[in-house]
Structures are given as C-alpha cells and as structure tokens.
Image 1: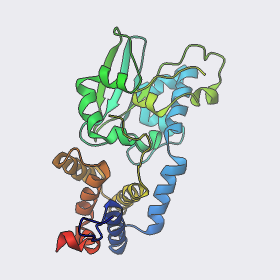
Image 2 (image 1 turned 30 degrees about the vertical axis):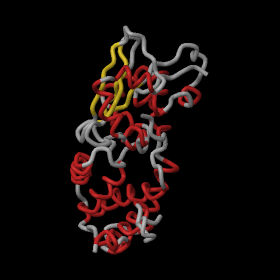
Image 3 (image 1 turned 90 degrees about the vertical axis):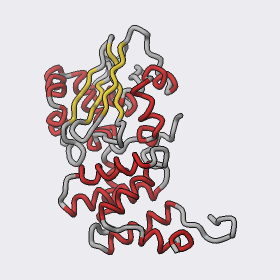
Length: 198
Length: 78
C-alpha cells in the first residue's frame, strides 16, 4: 500500500507483526505459544462443542436440567472449559420466547463452547442495533419470527456469557445425538437463527 | 449490515488475538484486565474495525506501545 506521495504506508497487518515481535521480545509470549493458540481455535475449539451440549440436552432430560442450572458445569461434563468459559448461562428457547445474545460493550462470548465470535457479532451495527430493534435485525439476518413470539435480548458481560438452547426441530425425532448436533449452528446458539430439520 | 461470518477477516487478526490470550496467561492476570482496555478502546472509536481497537488495547496491556507501530511507519510517527 502506498500513499499519494508513493511512500510505503503500514497497514494493520504490519502493525500487528510489529506488535507481535515486541511482545515476543518482552517475553510476554513465545511464537510457539501464539501458534498453538491460533491452531487450537482454528482446529479444536468451536461451536461444535456447544452443538454437542444442545443435542445432549434434547435427548437427555437430566442433562438438560443440569445445563439450565449451571451451563459451565454442564460444559465441563463434556470436557469443555477454560478462558471465557466461566459463568455461562443457558437460555432455552420455547414456542413463545426467543432469546438472542449480544455484547454491547465489546465481544464477550463463551469461547470454550462457541469458539471465537464472528466478525458481525463484534461489529458496531449489530452491537448497537440488536438491543433497540431485535426483530428488525433478526429479520435482516434471515430470521422472521412470528409477531406473537417474545424476543429477549441478553447483554453479555465480564460476569456472564450466554448459550442459547434452540428448540429441537419438528421432524427430528428419529435422529440420534450426533446427528442432532450436526444440525445445531453457531448462529442458532447466539439466537440469530433457529435449527431446521434436515 | 452483515459483516463477514468468519471469526477473523485476516490472518493477522488471529495472531493479535492469540498474543492477548498468551500474554494474559503469562502475566497471570484476569482476562478482565485486558477486556477493560478493549472496552475503552472500542468506546473511543466505535466504528473502527474491531481488531484495530484490540491492538490498541494490547499495546497498552503489554506496555508494548507504538514503538512497534512507528518502527514500521516512520512517516506517521516522525
């Protein structure tokens, strides 16, 4: 990239590289440790963890009770936990209530069970608008909810992060837990989508 | 209004994300200490790309301020 004088202009990628080099030089991180975190979030941690919890709750009423009582503990049962996984609250959608999650101040999100939030979740338009006009924002994202369904918007914070437990889709009665988990999308667990039968 | 669906738009965003995670662990402080800086950085310029605010927060958090930025961008810092 060059400016109008033809001089090289550093973009955010160069700034990031310089910052990483400084942090490594200061001994606050090693390149190996940084690589490991990137790889961990690219390969291992992600919404498939949350999807497994949701599917388990659909087929196992006792697990559902435990999930709704303490989602952090219910995640730990399946081996999921760690930074940003503390104080997770599960919000169950019903035929009359639809839950949707935002973090208005930054980007709080339950990393161990949903991974890193998508760019739109961290964007100013979503953070600013979903609280004031949830029905319109959801419609823009492709989710048209019946007027009679109450929408509850939950603002994440340092103290609490949320997992939306979507409704099990009609027509999925014959599916087992892994097949159900494959239907559960990240957006359904944020509350900007619902789960559809295959 | 729809921004990209992926967690990161560019590889460098994943790198600076990971830098913060590792530095928080290495320093043995609560993640909230980083988060508070991130919130302030976002509040200062809400419409700026998220990971540019993240870099501001990370520079402050690690005490690795704009020296690095200036090193690659002398035109802006001189």
